[in-house]
Image (tube, rainbow, N blue to C red; front, side, top):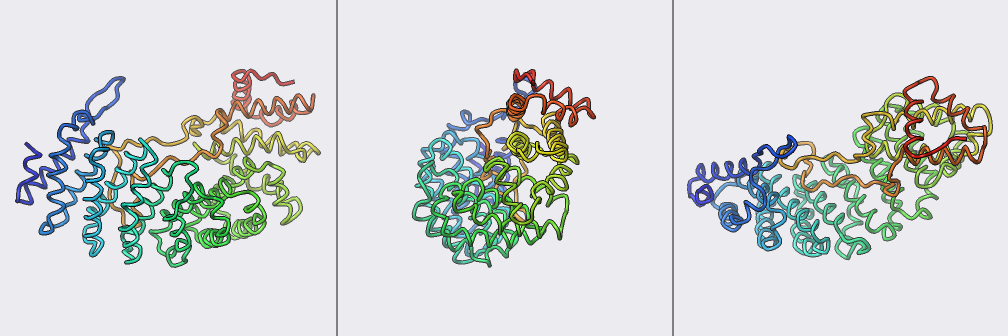
Length: 471
């Protein structure tokens, strides 16, 4: 009955029909184990998909009607509920959405309608490419022409959306497929300074550049100076410093070390200068997260060597004055917590300089206490690295500063996926260090952990669980 009302010539009738269907698609009922499950799932919706999309798109295609945000939101919801059954209709729906995009790009009037339009495209990409990443080629073929039009026309309201969808498709590209011709030709213009001056572009462009680094790092080596230029511009602004570090972590994770490490001295000079000028808690968190990633990827000796090039003893000085105090103040959570654990474990077990004198041994004890504190902290969520959001309950809509496309988001990439259990890895590595330095390490462990019985008990528990005997 509601679907029939979508065919009404009266705007109020078909709008209420679309709004009612959208609400039904997000309605929840009690499920097993006190959970809530969708009242209408993909199987229930499947028989109605054809008439539902016909009714909804007849309104969208009608040039005489204003852009109706309730209708577009209903399309987005229906696509999300039907995600497993979209393969048959994906081409038709995509054609309808891209022609709607071409129309609104000429004169964007309704920000909510536009947001739901881009969310609908994101749902399609996610649903179809999750089943088979080879479908990215078809999306590129379909979406690149309208996206290029948006970028050439400089439709400022749409560019952040386009960059997010370009990143989403690129992230889904099959492993080993490289960048492809379309993405390769698009890269150089993305470094244009004017693009980065628009506040709304920065988060989406950063994600797109990181996606490029993950899929075609060797192709980007000739552009490394340009990428570092973007990094330098971003890190100089308090509002954008977090995006500077997103980009820097992407470079460290994906760029060939022989291209990236020779530039490390310049990068560290920029970071140290900013640390002297603006030692805010946020910046300290960002820089120590990067140090942990760097140590985890390249080893503690590389960290000390690079920093000691700037000033002898700087590596240990930063550990004592910046890194350890940051972890003593508050434990990081999720992916950063794991990254810190991997970096700290390497510092503890692969840094002879820390075992050479009393000062070094004291630093070692402090680092161990920080690492055990992360494992013992209930807020670190070491074993659930990404936050699972419910697609139905998420606040989805336009935001004047930067509109995140909910359905285009993906969990952050774990740089140390090979480390299954960071706590076990810590005590196993410390166990090996004890075995190679008999009688030397256990007093340092006691020095670090005995002031806090909770940490001592936590460490003993980790050793028992991992079957580690300290000698």
